Length: 237
Image (tube, rainbow, N blue to C red; front, side):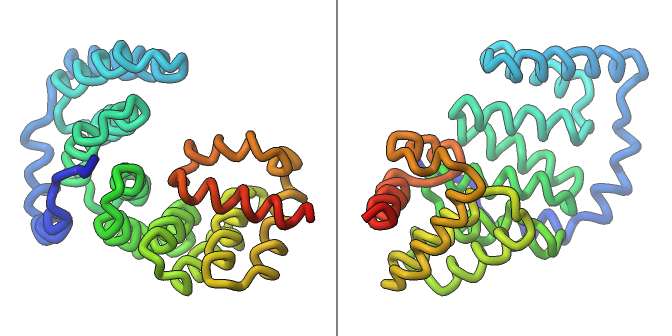
């Protein structure tokens, strides 16, 4: 599925930042609405933690209706829609959040993930690149850029971004597995296995072939999971 929201909107959001932020206060919700919206957000987050996504989304939509210019409310809604697999709606909600604050790295990290899992790799690269510009030490952006570049078969860029992510988040095995598959498909099998062994040092569960299906939740495509399984098999031989 492709999320069909033009990435060029990013440019218009940035260009119009001053007027958006200047006018924001003019639409402030009454204090009672703010209070009620806060309660709905809390309820929505509680449902989200329980993975009760329909109830979470309904509560978060109500919070947005009551307080439409609350940035966090729209981010929460968009991310929950993503968790529920509603990628089109997630992108719409997150772009609305971006229009309220076009300089929020977490918002663009979330947007980039939506585009990545939807298979819109070019837009994922654009959005995550902006997120990395906003926050130079953005391990999430670099990690997802690596996965996107790998799927685009731009392996040097995949290696570079995975290396940055692994350096910034040294306790997380995901960037190391991303680095391993980038090396593997660039025919550097030795470095691929070395990177994978570092991931194993962090989490022994990565020695279990079946456990690697969990990487889907970390943004890996089915093909990337298969590649990681191939590296695991080679590392054991």
